[in-house]
Image 1 (tube, rainbow, N blue to C red):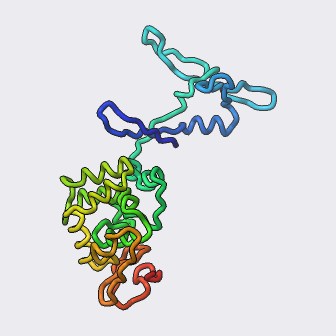
Image 2: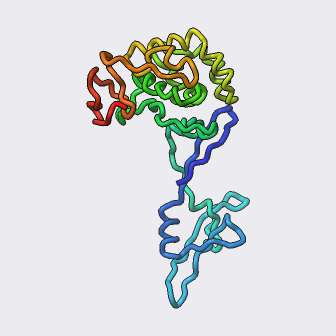
Image 3: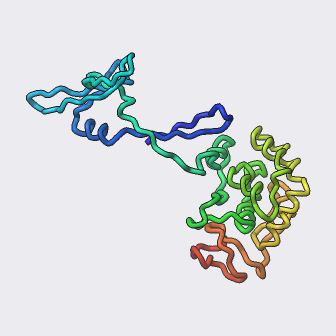
Length: 249
């Protein structure tokens, strides 16, 4: 199966999936269909020989008068062997790994994907706090250059940033760290940081990731902590995650 990405006339990204038909796979598997060396858009139905019987293959096309005409598949246009496939994947519109590869970013943990709750990926401020805990070793622009994180910032019910995220989007689009730092000083982001500290994640507030490369403030032993591996919120005083049994650090 192959998926083709194209920019449509409605200024939106469209995905089209297609694959060869079962008949094509059967013909190729039985060595009854051969490629044309000088014409990749054509195939050739093999003729029977003393060593192998090959059934005749036919296809139908319309002539210039609109009549259906049956032709022997010697040659055979490859387009007759391809079928359309419905393609739906919310990760492909702007996959965070694809965006981060453009920025040469390698983060140890990615932000959860939306609508994947049944797969154990939940987008909330617990997972946001856990994700932002990587800030001690990453640039702020690297952290926010994740499509799923940006979508969460825009659509979350607690603090949606739909009307104030334009500057950040421009920073991500142009890979401008200075512009990202300017947006980071906004009141909206300060509120997001406070919310992350409130839910008990490892980010305890603006002081923890306010300075680039500065030391992290350790989470309080009396506060719940978010697992770095599965984002499950654990009770204070435990060193192993109750969900995945992996160590806290």
